[in-house]
Image 1: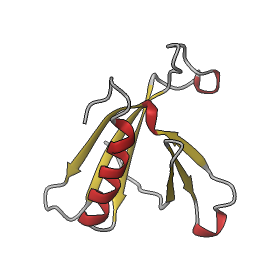
Image 2: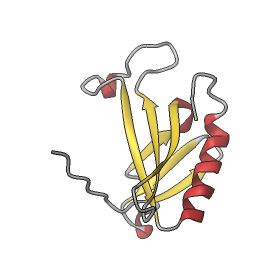
Image 3: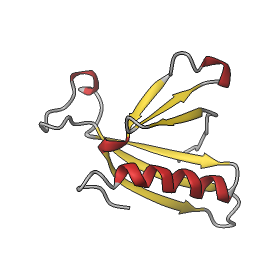
Image 4: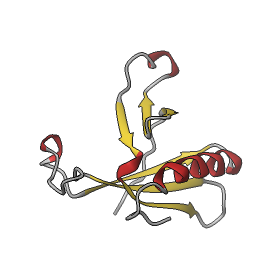
Length: 111
């Protein structure tokens, strides 16, 4: 069976088409990771049965523009899935729409 565990992260969306994430608001001087939104191949809103969780999911390609697997990600599959849970429906819709603006630059993406 699958156990879903969400870890709280803080995100900053920058004009360089990247989503930076942090473990705490105090650690924004050095991100824990970066999601390149131009590598998103799928973006979709998710609903749970009772609409109490406000989720969306991004599928990220682990391949570089030339189609070769990035050396740092050789041990991972071709894609990485991110499932993000927001505190409110409005938060989810705002994040989803902002990210969709960047993702729309990738002609292979679906949303």
